[in-house]
Length: 115
Image (cartoon, rainbow, N blue to C red; front, side):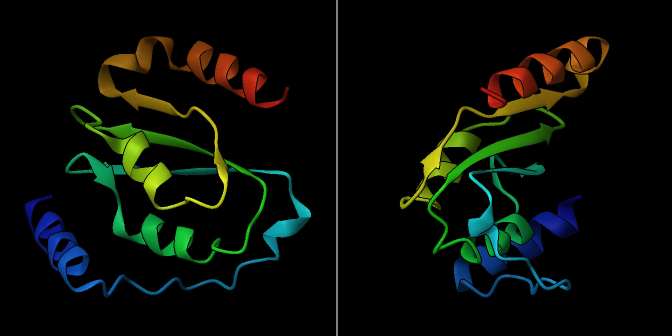
């Protein structure tokens, strides 16, 4: 975990984010995209940041969902700052303490996203 955090901090400082290994589809065929990933030091993980860079021309709504071992910090604000050109819906963050109720939380969030 600490080694990954060190690499991520270097990537953030340099702006040299990791490459994505799979070609992405044309997302403009969708009106809403759900983007999931882990919280790294209270922020969007660097691979997810790279993915969001690929969405710079997207014009729909994006909704984050994320997991955190501790506290998510300012994850949603960080996420929204990376996507200023799109509408960012309220996300869903889960921690280990949410596991007993995770299914109902995911279901409620999913139903809200469907409307």
